[in-house]
Length: 415
Image (cartoon, rainbow, N blue to C red):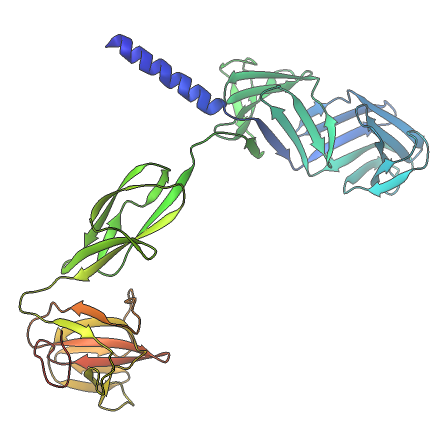
């Protein structure tokens, strides 16, 4: 038993390691990065978030005029940068000779900050808002870039894979701190007092730098949205991976019974408690319910047919005739059942039916999804009650009261 447990633990560790190791590269985006040059000392530094990324290794700078400088990383081919400190502008030059005036110039979207005179600066900075650092896990190479151009290939950087998802990186000249990137959590820390390349005590500060991980193998999840038509509720909505067996549940309200689950126009199952296997997509399932039949009670129907009378009801909407019929094209929005009684208009859109007062405007709540086709509702009402029906006709809601629906009478249809 102990041996089996050890095997399971080892397999779990291997699985987790492979799971988190599955990424190609990560990218750190810096919205504020500077290349600083001091003409008197001819020193160049590239820095961000208070840390130097490069001390100018591989860079060549040539002063062409007191206000004009050429910059080039040694690996660049066919172009270089020209900085005009008087105009505070940076250009990409092609077809020219490095260190001489000439060539084709394209202005770059790089801000230039100058200390001292623009015609003879003591120092100046190129400010980048699109700088980033890319780390490749396979080659463990680093590139630092901005303005669509590589600024450093990271030859003066150290890299260590502490865990498949935990990477330490540092510039050679850093002392007492390094950067730690967690590709699982997509978090970036400045780590002080620890030991580079190992898990060790120290102080870490989470930096507000976006971490983008490419090629990471994660389990894709999909949304299962469950909804219910009038008459019940549902359980089981959530995010699940493809192939997961999900237990979904439809719960009828009192007086209702479950009919079926539907996806779009297709019926999925007639089981209220159903085990559904996710496909690889987001989807919505709808639970449908109906009112339960009561022995001896008729079906209360809103029925439109090619009959001169259709269904006769009493129309008590103010301003309309005292009687009318449900017409082809009417849409049933709500229905309710009340104790039967005298129907009295109270004015102001209010009507009294027996001891109940209702508003002629349709009530709050979920509307019945109806069309101008045959729609049946099983009437779970005692003898002598009334059905209150709200109809939408031509954009206007109308209130009908159907008296004594428990007793058939010649001018109406109850089925």
